[in-house]
Length: 200
Image (tube, rainbow, N blue to C red; front, side, top):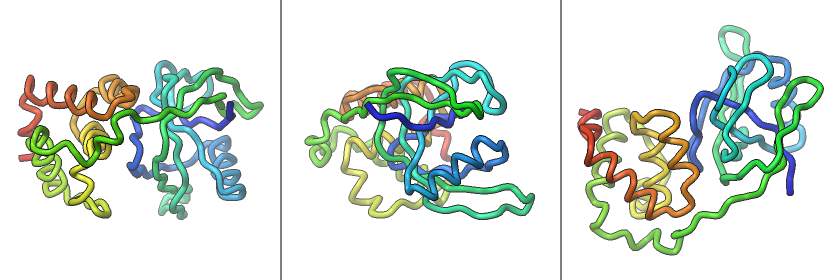
């Protein structure tokens, strides 16, 4: 069991994704200082109840570990950071530090189906094409994205991240531990809606 600080947000962060954050509350300024000093990260979790600002936030048990990869002082004087998401985890127990920073005792989660990452073939070709259109439309670029489009885990995470889905739906996809089942569920959502047309 490992204890990590938590950052509840009104969004879901998927492994491999990047997220810019504006830091203005003292507890999160302290968190950033701690992470930079100790070369550690923190957990990003979707809010279940409460607000991002202030105490008393409740969040879902499954989240994603994030590390700071860049930081700067913003024009408004606040601290800006960019985090990159790593592994998923499940929170077994929540607690709160004296400064109201939420923390959790976690267990790391593994991804099933990873051995199939390079074997998805033509079955999900339409999803690969959809993600490529999204990348082109929003001018999004990932390192080695052409090769990674063949990976079930990466393809599923990027689609779940970028498609205009409700946060609770995204959370469901994050909690799924099988990359091929995640793709199947995403395919079902795309088939049942006109979501594939949103990128033009």
